[in-house]
Length: 355
Image (cartoon, rainbow, N blue to C red; front, side, top):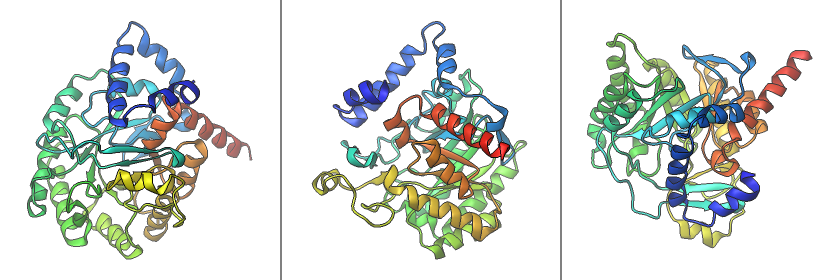
């Protein structure tokens, strides 16, 4: 019903406007008596065969919601009813900021893709932490953290540490986002020296706490093999728990270099920003496989990029990912996306078990 009736209607309106409308609708609809239980019955697929233990956390299934959808931890309880094994909030900065000017979110319908240049718009880490203290669900929550736009890169570590300390009591794992293309200069922090320094500082603070939390690194799909080799070395030497591969791409082409299906004038009109969805799928899978094979499977990888179906998720898992996440696929496939992927993965698991 979503793909045939609801999505065509929603896609008649501005993407960010519909995003906020969907938030309000889910909040109101799932506040009705019995609504959350009914949603869980429809959308949650449970099976011991789907469970995964990764960086010391037991996940009920390997399909998570990527950061960017619920930036401010406003819908964690509601999203827990839609079948996700974990929900990642953010990106959160220590101080609230409005992000880039609108319009900043665009659909490329022919490619089932999005371009965004949101710019870490968020209410600040403290506001999100306060909401998480009041949540009622037990869904696994990741905290994706970044620096404020006005903070120079030389002082970025202080921003990441501030957001880390604020969120530490209320999230299950952390993601260090140095790969968004929408904050000027942020990707410079992916270079070996500043990234090593940043991760070492975070890990030092983490290990001083009574209950250290896994810290992951989110990287871009646009890194060269040499840069990926540096990432492997950095993750090993800093004790980083794992990698999320990948963020959005700044390229305007399919992973194989072929043109996008969307008319070039539409793509050009959208302007700068990160491209997500199927056009980045193959490149993100390449990065996953490269990291896993070159490192000797030394750390877990969460695969993100172009996942819409169970086959897409299997591709990432076959490449070596321990878990997967979706965002653009959730927009195009609707609230049943996680369950459909879990059901497909379960069929695949059971078939392999019989062989």
